[in-house]
Length: 328
Image (cartoon, rainbow, N blue to C red; front, side):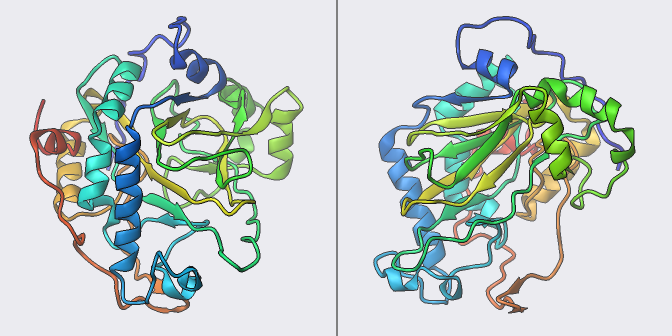
């Protein structure tokens, strides 16, 4: 499928706005404070636990002895869940349509006519009485093809639990966004390097990370309170870290872009993906890459794989518009 050529230059990233947008455009990331009320954060954490408890492997939020791999659904990199049609659970769409979330992305893109990604969630559990989770190898990357120019996708984390400097969470390379064009001009040989199954993903080697550090960039852990939204430009180098504490990480990944960025063919494809309750990449309006590979759990066939969510979303006009199924 041809990729959209829609321009992202609807936003003046050189202008000063006097709010979190200045951080985003200057540093490549920002935290929007208090977008989701505390009671709603508590609700989403409860629904995440409830979702895991629906599977047949004996997980019980009140029994820390069940907080291990053998009792959990298949996940990656800590607690990232992208299987079982979790993207379209009712509570996931409720989170995506929180007024404060919609307001933040509408403010960012200067339009309330948005599409949203069909992305997953992350519920990283502290390991209870066991030793802390082993640190995984970092996988610094960007989620925008270097041949795309300008700000075309801004990723989001809807944060529901306290997330401090030693908790599991997002690491960003502050200042890397503006240097990306220079990096790829200086390293033309890397552009054809294989990516992670989708166009808009590029991973960096250690010496390439150092290239940015040598030019004044630094890796920072992004901290957030319950109800905050973490935003970052998809051209900003980033990756996750697992916790050094016993604190819970509970988030939903959600990215929004203007509906005008998507062409008619992409909108039809997105509507079909929504009807089938499949997930996509972080991109709401293009590169709607989906996976259909058989899932394994603990090295064996995952007998609990699903083709519909446990609780279907309410197909409100807002949900259908964000899904590309109803025109604005």
